[in-house]
Amino acid sequence: MITSIYNEKEGKESLLLRQFRDFYKEVIIQKEMIYDSSARTGDDIRNRFAEILKNQEIEAHEYGKGYGLSFYKEVKYVMTALADDVFINDIAWRDSEDWKDDSLEVRFFNTNFAGDHFFDKIDVLLKNADPVSAEIAAVYFLALSLGFKGKYRKRPDSDDLRQYKERLFRFIFHKNPDSEGERLFPQTYQNNLTEAGNRRFSYLKLWAYGIAGSFLGLLILSYIVWSSMTGDLMQIVDSIGKTMG
Image 1: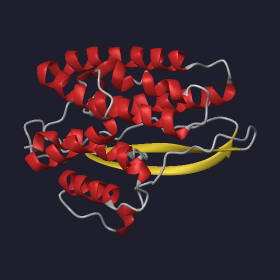
Image 2: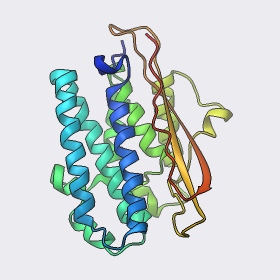
Image 3: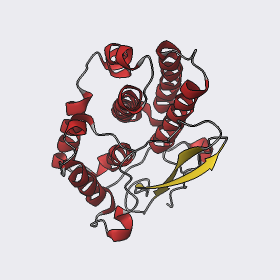
Image 4: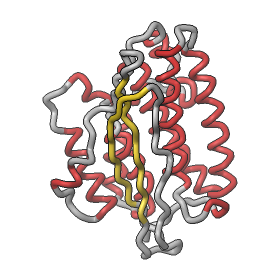
């Protein structure tokens, strides 16, 4: 039985996947602002993320009640780990070293080992194979597809990242990824924001599909399609597919 947290005011849309989409959209915006303004500091960015996460937690509690808040905290960990990875490893900027000591993970979870723990949590999720966790598995899948590497960043020859994505894919979709599906797995989330006036931006499309088979009749299926385009303005596809009940 698969369940999904959705916001009734917005229709049958996955709340968790929409929150993940909104958070990562902000990651891209803040990343762009670093290149546009040398005055942008790590504290500015962390404070903005803190505001978003606080509002999302309130929303998860309101619409998902107790179990919704529990699920959100899991997703929150994934989002903070992904953002930390971006602002520590993906951007050459003055505050990258300071971010290591004052990461979002440290601020919100008082830990500093997401590079390992991220994958430990996936292992537990897949071992338990609880259908209720399919939506959370989709969030892990999205984070890996966006380029989170954690402890495997220093092991470029490792095949573990691909295997994790394939295992999550099978858990979510109940089938093996085919050649077409594998092309949906990007290896990085770099936006190539280094040259003003001729920047190549990657943007994200998130689809969520649902299949009846649970109390809510929702099976969250997640795909990522990355495209690149040249232009002066960052363009992000900020729509998420409605689940089909």
